[in-house]
Image 1 (tube, rainbow, N blue to C red):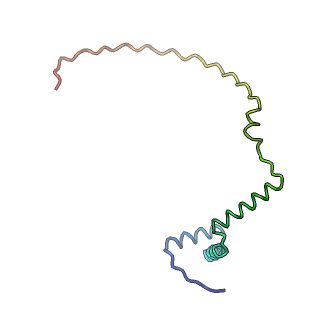
Image 2: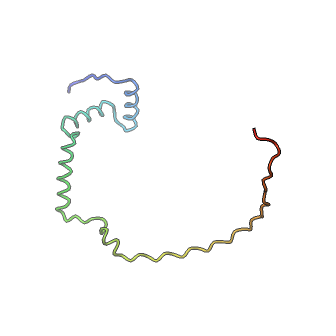
Image 3: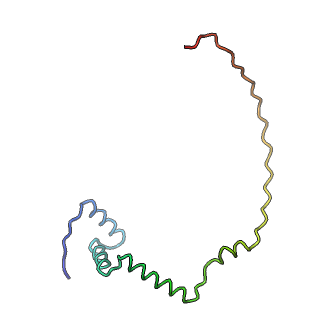
Length: 110
């Protein structure tokens, strides 16, 4: 197996080591898996889309049944009548507020 040296920012390497330990692996293994995925073309968007299309055709060919009956079937079902609302308790009486009249001020405005 060949060895390789790469240059990384200290903070980036520290964060990668912490995350690798949390996931029960090593930075070396994470790098190896990323390079392997890159070399095999798994990171290629076109390859992923082609694989997705193949899987979609396979699902359709195996008498795929949707999980819900569709919009028309949902609207064909009768709607449940609305439940009556609970009566609202009368509000407590509000104390009357005396009216306030504005009286003209005898001071001149500046």
